[in-house]
Image (cartoon, rainbow over all chains, first blue to last red; front, top):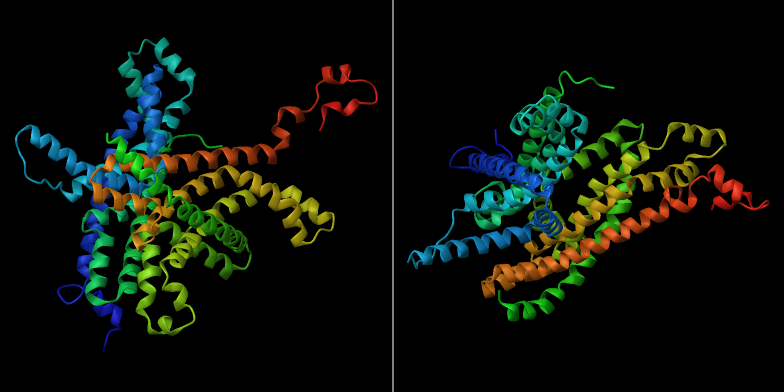
Length: 239
Length: 250
């Protein structure tokens, strides 16, 4: 029995590219998760900044989200990719280190995608904070809760629930944006696909395989977020 | 900050602005018609058609645009049949591949926006239109479509902005639009921040113009939400001169 051409190309082991592609998928997943977590951290801080009492602070948050959301992601990645190693070298020069420094591709990818998803997460979390009914906050204060207790018991559980659908979108966006990180040289799905198609002259096969792998990732994580929403909304009365 | 370099980079990046705008405008234009077709197929009662539209949208929304661009630009050349067909002069050109990929992509996203708009039209209105004897085409043209567009406009504004940003990916297949030029300048000068800021100014200006235009169209399309068109109150009617009782209406 002879296998079709594309199956031979994608077989597991040394003869085919199957295992390399799956390893690329794991790298995509890893960098997307790292960037998403960083994005949530930045988003939480960003939401706090945008909800600040002080105009100057609010303007900083506004500038950040407007700039990142209004400019192509690719351009932001170029800035951080080229700017990152230069900034690191500038810092190193202060300590008397004169050699060329190349920042790890995974780190730069995480920082770049985290900066981008952080801007979107800021808006999602800000909206979720504003969705908590004011009366509940007043009631918590009237009960004598400290700011911290109010934050932990009243805000966090509800903000997390309100933000979940929006954060699901941010995750999808981050996952798909990882394909742009291939330009930094990180060997994720896209990079692996272009290496493979370069050496086999079968670009359609490998980019199609890449597309299928992304589809698998988005489909499963969609399902995951759906389940998480169900779980988060357990015990919430539905109209 | 190297102000001199920024002044030098300004006209160079400006020269990529038309490329960005033409890419975005033509794929949005073509994608809009594609989206209407897909949205109609999606709401079709004939299962295979609805299924086809669903999978089209699912695939294009579930994969990165970069994969779609590479698949069309690099991928199609793999097949002898494509290389010898009449399509090859089109698929060989980065320009047409970029427009094709962007059109298919925005078509998928926009169809979902339009579908949302179509489904938001109250069923009673469609029943009423049927009762008036309107046929399907007329119902769509007079009842469903105008309201669907109004409902969908804010989301479509976001899609326009997303598309303007997405054109930057055309630089990965050799097209020199604004991001492509910015990248070239950055690797020539090693001043990423300055070049980034100049390019950002152009993109933000485009985004700003789009948001203003969309807000204006939204204002024009929703006359019932404007002040001048609010239902006159009893006081308005009292002060209106006799014979001009509907002065409060437009």
